[in-house]
Length: 477
Ligand code: ADP
Image (cartoon, rainbow, N blue to C red; front, side):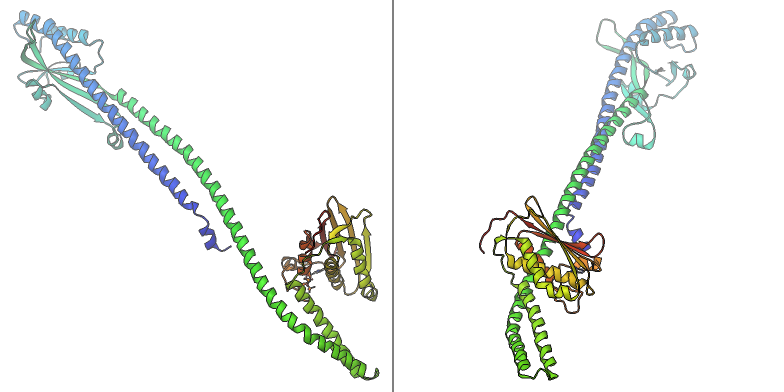
C-alpha cells in the first residue's frame, strides 16, 4: 500500500497527541493544586502559631509581672538586675513553670532602654546588646510583630516547602494594673521563637502525597486512554484497508467489464469473415485433385481458421458469459461425455485417464452444457501440461450438500509466479493460448454457486478442485 495512504488512514494520531497533552496539563494542574494547598496550609500554620505565641506571651507577661517584677521591685528596688544570679534563677523558674506545657523553642527578654537581652533560654545570649532589630523597636511602641524565617533549598522555598522554619514573635512586656483592663507602661520585650520545621515536614509529606496520588491516577487514566485509542486505531486501519481492497476489486471489475464489451464486439465482427474463410478453404480443397500439393495449403487455411474460431469463441464466452440454465444433471455423465469427446486426442498421445466416481453421487441442479465446457478446459490444460503423455486422475465424490470433482495431472505443476496470476484473464504461459480458459471455468463454476481451486498436487503436477452445491433449487434463467 502507498505510504501516503497509511498516513491518511491514521486520524487517531491526533487523539494520541491529545492524550499526551492532557497528561502534561493534568500533571501541571495537580502540581499547581498541591502548591496552592501547601501554601494555604502554611498560611494557616503561621496564623495559628502567631496566635499561640501571643497567648503564650500574655500568659508569660502575667506570670513574670506577678511572680518576678513585683517581688523583685520590692526586694531590690530594681526590676532588671542582669548580673544578679538569684534574680536570674528566679525569673528562669517563673518562665519555665509558665511555659512547661507550651511548645516553644526559645524565649528571649529584652530590656527597654538599651536593647540588651536580660533573659534567655540560651545563657550565652544573656547580656548581648543590639539583637532586637526593627521588630523589637515596634514592640516597644506597643505593636506585637511576628517574623518567619525559612531555610531550605531553592525549590523548597519556591514551592512553599522549606526544610526548616521558625517563627519569631515580638511582644511588649507591660506592667499590669491589677484588677483593671488598662495597660501599664512597657517594661521590655519578649521574643518567643517557635520551631516550625516539624509542621513544614508534615506539609511537605502531604504535598508529596497529593502529587503521587494524582500522578498515579493520571497514569492509570493515560494507560486506559492509550489502550482505547490503540484499539480505535486498529479498527479504523482495518476498515480503511478493507475499503481500499474493495475499491481495487471494483475498479478491476469495471475494467474487465469494459474490456469484455470491447472483446465481444470485435469477436462478433471477426466470426463472420472467419466462417467465410473456413468454408472457402473447404471449397478450394474439394476443387483440387487430392494429389495436388495445394491441398495442404487449403488444409492450413481451414485448420487455422478453426483455431481462430476457437479463440474467438473463448473471447465471447468470457465477455458474455451465459447464465446457467439449471436442470437435473448427472455430473459423472458430463465427465464421461468429455472423455468420449477427447478420446481421439487421448489415444493419439497415449494419455492414461483414471476415473474414480463414488457410487452415491446425487443428481444436481446444473447446466450440463456449461459444466461440459468448464471440465473440457480443465482437461485440455492437463493434457497441454503433458505434451509427451502421462496420467490424468479424475475423482468425483459427494459429502453432505457438496459435490467435489478433483482433476490431477502429472505435468510440471505450476510455479508460484504463475499461481499468483492464474485467474487473470489473458494470462497464459502458452504460445498459442488465449489465457481465458480458467477465467471462463471460474465464471461457470461460480455461476453454479460452486468454488474452484488450483494448486500443486502433493506428488507432482497440478490439482484442480471443483466443488458444486448439491441442493440448489432449479430455476430457469
Ligand atoms: P491458457 O490455457 O490459454 O493458457 P488458462 O486460463 O486455461 O489459459 O491457463 C492459464 C495458465 O495456467 C496456463 O497458461 C498455464 O501456465 C497454467 N495452467 C493451467 N492449468 C495447468 C496445469 N494443469 N498444469 C500446469 N499449468 C497450468
